[in-house]
Every structure is written in structure tokens, then in C-alpha cells.
Image 1 (cartoon, rainbow, N blue to C red):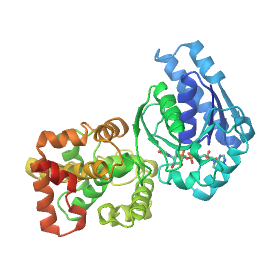
Image 2 (cartoon, protein in one colour):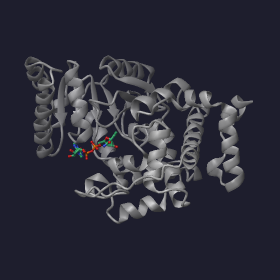
Image 3 (cartoon, rainbow, N blue to C red):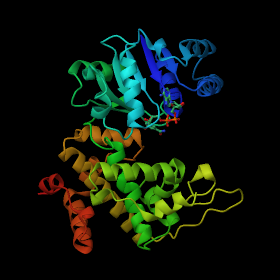
Amino acid sequence: MKVGVLGAGTMGAGIAQVASQNGCEVVLVDLNQDMLTKAENNLDKILARLVEKGVVSDDDKINIQGRITYSTDSKDFKGSKIVIEAIVEKLEVKHAVFANLESIVANDCILASNTSSLSIASIGSALKNPSRVIGIHFFNPAPLMPLVEIIPAVQTSQETLTSAKSLIDSWGKVTVLCKDTPGFIVNRVARPFYGEALRIYEEGIADFATIDWAMTELGGFKMGPFTLMDYIGNDVNYAVTESVFAAFYYDPRFKPSFTQRRHSEAGFLGRKSGRGYFDYAEGVIKPEPTKDEVVGKQILDRILVMLINEAFDAVFMQVASAEDVDKAMTKGVNYPKGLLVWAEEIGLKNVLGQLEALFAEYGEDRYRPNPLLRRMAK
Ligand code: NAI
């Protein structure tokens, strides 16, 4: 089967690798020859490491590389069953690109976008046959992260959905079905992990290290919110927050944080700039958390109930099934447990009680308990 991937950046290169590892013939296209060369060299290094580790054989390496063609010409997509687009996150550019793709491929070729923040409906509007558009949202790094969100737009046909989902399933990925709404599942439900942590810091309840300690040591999360934001990049994480906030018509639940904005403006972007919430310069010792279990538990509980409230909202608003919401958070961002299962464990009445207490104290819409949570707690 021939698969086209447009854009040879971080995501496109990773998606091309996944497709080829699963036996597809891949055409990877980018306007920029340097990006193609970089992608080709990177893949060689990645596969060499996998050979060393014994994960793939020498023959596998040759075959995986042999199945990928690198090109600067989209016409080479001719004959593809699906093209997955992973270029810059700009709607005008995606429109032009999708219209052009349609003039190259056959009428039954699926045209998918890996967009994180644009609506699939808006991307599909550039097509003469928009029933073939779909969102196929991988996580970074695509070869390692099991989750893929599958997002049919209002125009998408059942046939497109079924074929796209079964293809990605056949690549060994964990797929979840998601409505075409801002942030899809993961980037919507995960917002409080960052936003509530920043708010707790801004209120002076604890410092970055202590909040991270509470979430990892007491909560079992692999990384604390500040370490994770430093890893993602404060500029990137802030931009996602701002775009989700705007896309939800400025719902206060998603309000971005000044602290993150200032860090981003100052160039404290995280690991990539050498400094974010923490200093990554050589020899600098990471600050010690204040290991007060009572405060730690308050921090964990507050962030956790906010995450659970968002998970309930996604189910309440039919964005995805409860099972898929839990799958998305455990397979896409490595949460130690699905949020809805977690809510049952600590008790829905308990979760509701904590949210009601926050809402009563702050009087802010951000803390309003979700109606589905209320109903189920009853
Ligand atoms: P990137 O900046 O690493 O790569 C984009 C590539 O597209 C570049 O190589 C660029 O030369 C190429 N390009 C730009 N315009 C083009 C055009 N008209 N025709 C052909 N190639 C073109 O970007 P990245 O991070 O890989 O993101 C790509 C898409 O994937 C975006 O829509 C983004 O929202 C989405 N995404 C990104 C994730 C991430 O963690 N970086 C995660 C999931 C989705």
C-alpha cells in the first residue's frame, strides 16, 4: 500500500517511519530539500540504534529505508491510498496544499491532517470532495507514542473513517475516536495539569519543585507539570493553551497564565533554551521541594479534580467515550491511570465535594463542577 506523508519535520518524519515499519511504501514530500536530507539521516541513526539493540535486523533496516522515497514534488503522491499532512500549522497554507493534493491523487484517496489545533472541517472545506478529509493526530515522537486520535469532520464519510481507523490500527497504534472540537481529547483534558499547577504557584501555595514533587511522588505522574512544560517548551505549551482558550470562546476554564507567558517572553523556554522554570545549565543543582505531605496532597487533589472535571466534560459533550478518554490520557500522555477510573476510585462524591469547595471559595467559573459528574455522583 502506498502512503504519502507531506512535511518532513518532527512529525512527518516520524509518521513516515511508522508507515514504513509496517510495510507500506512511503513517499515523504517536503518543500525544503534540507528537511528531507535531515529526515533521511535521522532515520538512518534511529534504525542503526535499533539494530544495535536487537529490535530490528540489518535486513529490516534496509527494507524500512528502502520503502521510503524522499521528494520535493507532491506529484509523487500519485497512486497513494492516503496522504497524511504534517506541515506548518497555518490554515491558509493547509487549504492551498489540500486543494493541490486533490488534483494529484485519485478520488478515493484519503486526505488526512495531523493538525493539533485547527478544525478538520475548516481544512476539509478546501476540497471538492470533503468526504475524504479526516484528522489523524499522532503524538510526539510518533514512532514511540502509541496513541493516535482519529477525528472525523462533519463532512467525513463513514467509509473514510472506517478505512483510516483500520489502517492506523493495523500499524499497532491505539486509536481513539474524537469529535472535531478544540484540542481534541488530550490537548483539552490535559489543560489543568499545566493551568492549575501554574495557578497554585501564582497563589504562592508552593514553588515549582514542590508542585512537581507532589504530582510525581504522591500522584504517580511520570513528570511534574513544570518539568513537563520545560520539556515541551514554554512557548509551545503557552501557544497551545492560548489557542484552546480562544477556540473555546474564552471559556475561563482554559485561561492562560501570566507566569507562563512571562517565562516564554523572557526566553525561558525550557530545556531547549537552557532555562525554563528550572535552570538546566551544567553544574546547577535543581531546587529541593518542600516535602510537606499535607500541602502536597492538597496540590495533587486540586490538580487531579480539575483534570477529572475536564474528562467528565469531554464525555458530557460527546467529544469521546469514557473509555477513549481514559485510553487517550494513559496512552498519549502517560497518565498513571485513566481519569474517569481514578475518579471512581477516590469517589465521585469526594471529587464533586472538592470542586464545589473550590467553586464556593473562588466564585470563578473555572471551578464549576461538570453536570455529568454531578448526576453520576448523585
Ligand atoms: P515542523 O516545523 O517540524 O515540520 C514542518 C515541515 O513542513 C517542515 O519540514 C517544512 O519544511 C514543511 N512544510 C511547510 N510548508 C510546506 C508545504 N507547503 N509543503 C510541503 N512541506 C511544507 O512541524 P511539526 O512539529 O512536525 O508539526 C507539523 C504538524 O503536526 C502541525 O500541524 C502540528 O500542529 C502537528 N503536530 C505537531 C506535534 C508536535 O509535537 N510537534 C504533535 C502533533 C501534531
